[in-house]
Length: 148
Image (cartoon, rainbow, N blue to C red; front, side, top):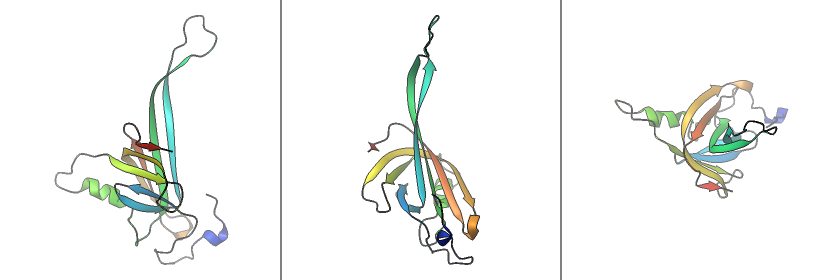
């Protein structure tokens, strides 16, 4: 998303201030406000080209998907770190379990575009434009339950 000067928060603004256009997704049953989510579905191939072939013969093997969610840290909503805190709580910490990812077409959680289970693989925090942004990535496990 390309931001304009009017999208930038005022330095020192309250952490509950929202700017920009929003999308909504749900991870592990928690609704996360975001300014961006993305989904990528990939296909792995093996080379089926035989001796004497002059054209490539790709043979599809399997599909996989990854998702990424980015948004501003907002104390009035669930921080993305909660996804890791829920996984790492307990002594000893439990095994990592798959969580459900639901992506909606706009900022109202009504029309599901994609839904599937996966593992959180990475989380990061950055502070561009004087406001904390959070990001989480996940890798899908198995077949998605919904693809619109």
